[in-house]
Amino acid sequence: MNIAENIQSFTKSIEQSITENILVSLSLGNYKGTEDQLKNIYVKKILIKKEEKLNFTYRYKTKDIVKNYDTKESLELIQNALNEGFRFATLFTTDFDLQLENFNNERIVVKKLKASKTAVPSTTHDHAKKRIITANDKAYLHELKITDDAGNVYNAAQDKYKQLNHYIEILSSLIKDIPQDKLKKVVDMGCGKGYLTFALYDYLTNVLKLETEVIGVEARKDLVELCNTIAQKSLFKKLSFVEGTIEEYDSANTNILIALHACDTATDDAIYKGITAKAELIVVAPCCHKQIRKQMEDKPISNDIDFLTKYGIFMERQAEMVTDGMRAMLLEYFGYKTKVLEFISDAHTPKNVMIVGIKDSKKVYKDEDILLQFQEAKAYFGIGYHHLERLLGL
Image (tube, rainbow, N blue to C red; front, side, top):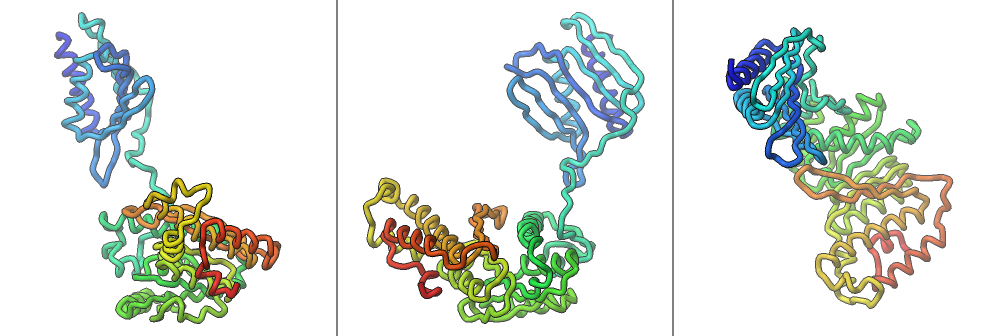
C-alpha cells in the first residue's frame, strides 16, 4: 500500500474501534506541519448530554485547546492530520495497540502490538458532582418545573438546579457549627417562588434530620398560595409560607434569618429583624443600594477617592461597597462575626455580595470602637444616616 492507503487503513481501524466500543485513546505526535507551536493531538471518547463525541486536545508549546466533534468529522480531522504533518500515531484499544510511523512521506510502517490497556475509560465528560440536593423523587422539584416525572433535571433547568445546590453548599458550611437545639426556626424573607426555601427545608429535614420549622415570607399572595400548595404536596409538614413584608414580619425566636435580593433598605429591615431576634445566623444578599447612593450624589464631598466617584459607574459601585460595608460594621457592633462572600445567585446574573453574620459570644457586644469607625465612615463619605443605623436606634 502507498502512504495515502496506509493512512486510510489506519483511520479505518480507528472507526472500527469506535464502533466495537474498544477505543481507549489515540495520540498523534512528531509534528512536522505548518501550524506554529503545535506538538500533539490526543483523542478520547466522551459522552455529552447522552451523545457520544470524540474529545480532541490540541497540545501547543504553551497552551492546550480542547474541542469536541462527532465521529464522522473526527475521522476526517484525524486523516487530514496524518496527511498534513503528524508523523507518528498510536491507537490504543482493549484488543490491541496500533502504531503508525511516517518516514518523511517516503514510507509508512504500521505495527500491531499487544494491548497495553485492558479497559475502556469512562466516557463521562465531567465527573458527576455529588449534589447535596438530589433530584430523584422530589415532588417540589417537579412542581417547580426543575425535574420531569421521572426525576430527571430538565436541560433548561440545569442552571437553577446547580444554583440550589450552590446555595445549600454555602449554608451548610455556615450551619454546621450551630448547635442543633438552636436550629428550631428559619425564616426566609422575600422568598419569591421559594426555590431556595424548599431546598433549605429539604436539606435540614432530609439530610441533617432536624425538626426545624422553615417559614417563607413573601408579599405576593399568588406566590404564597402556590408555595403552600407545593409544600403540602411534598408532605413538608414544618414548611409554610406567609403573606407579608419584611418590615411587618414578627421575627421573634428566629434562629436563622435569610433575605436574598431584598431591594435597597429592605435588606436593612431584614438585618434589623435578625439582630433584634438575636438570630444565630443572618444571611443577606443585597441589591439596589439607593439610600446611601442618593446621599453621596446629592452632597458630594471632597476626599481621597473623589477622582473615582465623579464617574457615574464608579459612584454606583462605591455606594454599594459603602452601604454593605456599613451593614457589616453594624453586625460586628452587635456581636456578630461577619463575612462578606461572593454569591452567584443565577447563571444569567452577575455575581452578588452575600453578607453573613454569625453570632459570636466571644465578641464584644456593642463595641464602641466599631461605632466610632462607623461614624467616621459616614463623615468621610458625606452620609447623613444609614437606614439600618436608624432602625437600630443608634
